[in-house]
View: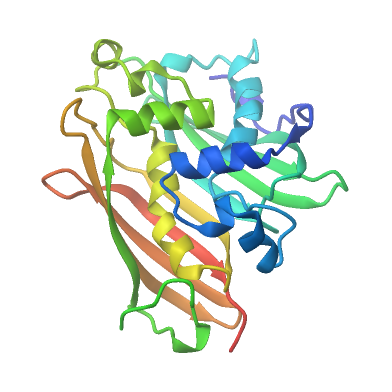
Length: 146
Length: 147
């Protein structure tokens, strides 16, 4: 992996409009039974504008930034050797249907460890007003030659 | 203490309390559904031949599926009384999903820290007959209004 990736910031992604049926589909896929994920009335009664996305939904938007990183011609990352090491989501507020979200990835660290490389990427996700919604942080391990 | 779903109460929490526990059955159908919903179409999550080609014993669950499922007991416990503000895991071991019998994932959610504006809930997430840990350092920070 190219060590000069550290500190690199990629351009913001195109806006992602969070659809109500997408939230319901994703919630069902992670075996959610929470009415806030499915029932608009329940979400509104709880003070939200629309159905609330599950805590890991941000990965759908983050994924677009990871594709930028893995696809960078000078990154030197062999996708077949990539293993997901750690994942974290830090929220300022939950994502709800109707949000229009933009994500921007910064490579916060690149390390080598016993033949393997580790890259940590922070994807900052903001709404249409520019306010922070969630930061999604992934550490990817790139296995070296065995 | 056993907590009631949807009525998380910060004042009633003590370190070590189990706030939720649940067992999930994951099948190949679950993986296909998650692939479509998430957009993660890596074939190691639906094709045994390709999984074996890259040195795995067979098809495994998406790590992000396991992470997404494991937090659900906490989401149900919180209901509308609080929100998840931070959630992190380490992927320590793959969850192999057999074509016929699937996989069983067990989640126990225990209070790790209580402070002024919420709590840290620590998840124990295990799978398979041997009940091995599949997510390490699985921590959910929840915001709860003081009562």
